Each structure stands twice: as C-alpha cells, then as structure tokens.
Length: 96
Image 1 (cartoon, rainbow, N blue to C red):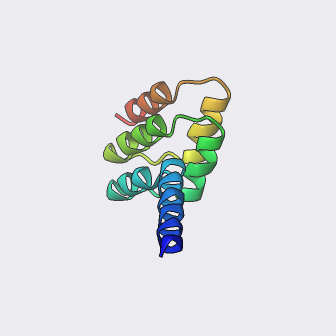
Image 2 (cartoon, rainbow, N blue to C red; image 1 turned 120 degrees about the vertical axis):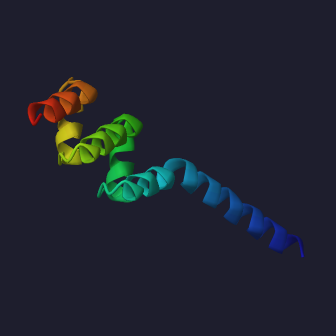
C-alpha cells in the first residue's frame, strides 16, 4: 500500500523535473505560430545558455513579416556575441 504511494510520488517528481527542464510549452508556442523547431533543439539551446524565449520571439516576429530565419543562425549569432533582436529587425527591414 505504501509502496504504491512512493512509486506515484517518484513518478510525479520525475514528471515535474522533466517539465521544468524540457521546454514543452515553448515548443507548443512555436508550433502555434508556424515556427518549426524541435524540443531537442530547444533543450540543446537551453544547455548552451541561449535565451530561448528571445530566440522564439525573434523567430515568431520574422515569421509574422514573411521572413524565414533558421534557429541555428540566430543561435550562432548569439554565441558570437550578437543581438538576436537587432538581427531580426534588420532582416525584417531589409525586405521593406
């Protein structure tokens, strides 16, 4: 009887831990706006200390304006010390 409660508790802790580490909500938000990015790619970016909220914001803004920016290009730009939002604005304004 108590073993069932322990097992359920451990499973609940594992699910909560995975949900906090794996950006499932961000992946759903990206899919809702038509941005194709996998959960594994988001997880990898989180391990690399890339602000994935800002990255998704930039991808969504570019998609709204009809521009296609690859997530890895924003990632490389950020890792090189660049500003993702400035890059996105310049890509959007270039076509106008």
